[in-house]
Amino acid sequence: MFGERIAHGVLSLAVATGLMFRLGDRVLPRRLATLVGIDRLRFPAPVRLGDTIHLDEEIADLRPMGREVGLVIVRLRLINQNGEAVMTARFTATAARRPEE
Image (cartoon, rainbow, N blue to C red; front, side, top):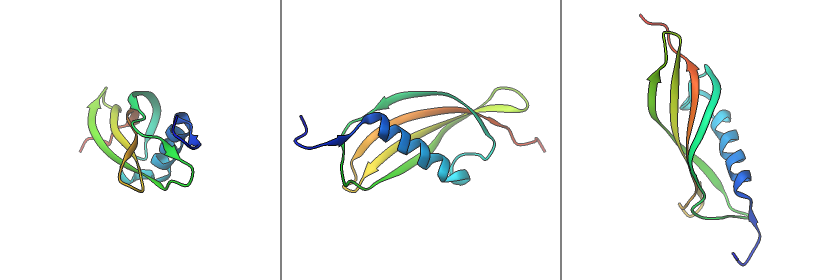
């Protein structure tokens, strides 16, 4: 279908998730606790063998769930060397909230 071998979409998701956690607290809080869900997961273009990919992430929303825990919603875009999005998703997790001052 693509004229060459491609990476499975779930592999792209695994790489994106690994990059997200490897980048540490650049975007995500250190106190990330549990994965709630992955929504709007799409693979608009294939990842081809030899592609160079990087992760673009942005906190889309923060929602308190109580005094100590909140939801963190992150928009993810896995981008290839041509600037094409090869995966997009919204990642929702719980995280410990900062103490109120």
